Amino acid sequence: MENIIRKEAGENVYNFISHHVDIDNPKTFVISTTIVFNIEKQEDKFDTIINLKKINDIIRINKFFEVVNSKLSVNGIFVCCAETYKSRRRRILRKFPSFFSYPYYMIDFIFKRIFPKIWGFRKFYFLITQGRNRVISKAEFLGRLVSCGFEIIDFKRYNNQLYCVCKKIKEPAYDLHPSYGLIYKMDRVGKNEKIIGIYKFRTMHPYAEYLQDYVIEISGYSQKGKPDEDFRLTEWGKFLRRYWLDEIPQLINVIKGEMRLVGVRPLSKRFMKEYPQDILQMRFKHKPGCIPPYVALLKQDVKEYIKSEKIYLTEREKHPFITDIKYFFKAIYNILTNKIRSA
View 1 (cartoon, rainbow, N blue to C red):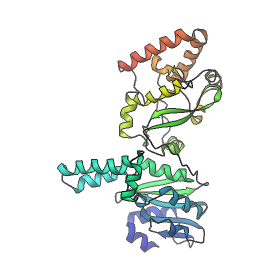
View 2 (view 1 turned 90 degrees about the horizontal axis):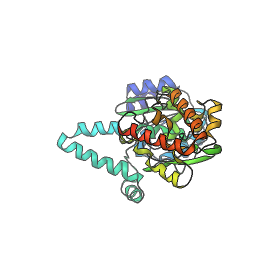
View 3 (view 1 turned 60 degrees about the horizontal axis):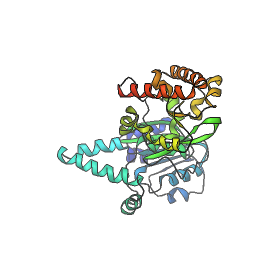
View 4 (view 1 turned 180 degrees about the vertical axis):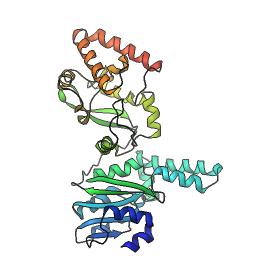
């Protein structure tokens, strides 16, 4: 096993893997494959499965991870690797002269990253490539693993590939509808604690929703109440958030009667834990809004914007219409004059 891993992946990868698992354990299964049948045909269950082939060439990635899950004992370890899109970009730009590398990279990115996520182009993409050598982000790689019942233990980059060690903690989610398109819905808590689907432009990589707890665990919250150092954000997502453009699809929720233009922001169940009970009870009496009070009151720190919501809700209970008009114009003024930016 030692020699196989060293020959296939190198000394550094061997040291990384052996730090986390007992390679000499007879219940350790080492393979280099993209074919799910090679995992599925194994009759035994294992304590560790190590796949040295990058997942970019697996046709149905989640199906592969689900089968690995079924072949592992509880708390079993799975080690796998992927070439992330940033590593791929570095490889392509170094491989060719600059006048050719950038156009080549853009065509490669559009065809192998964007096409698979657009209805109508997806079938064409898979017909041509069979899903092999696809472009995948770090967040999508790790998020797919979590969605398939694994907990991330560690990851490191070697030989231009990201190696991940994870642990089986539950059965796969079998998610047939992950957040994949340009516009997607997030489950949030609305009026009377009703769960509503909030529409937004995508600013994160696919499967990012599965990594929220993990990102918060390793990085915590920033002063603006968002997960700190969040690698799930895309480059264009940062631009959309900077100018609040990602919030535009929430107008669909306004038309559906689930939200108002102005109001407290719709919360995830995870973030509700940061709120005092008295504020939560005030919030549940009102529909959430597209433009939150902290934008008008310039209170973007976590504790400050909770305070801003209390100020807004107290005012609104006395003068609903006037309060919303006042907060709307103050918020628009602060956005247009760059006094506040989205996280």
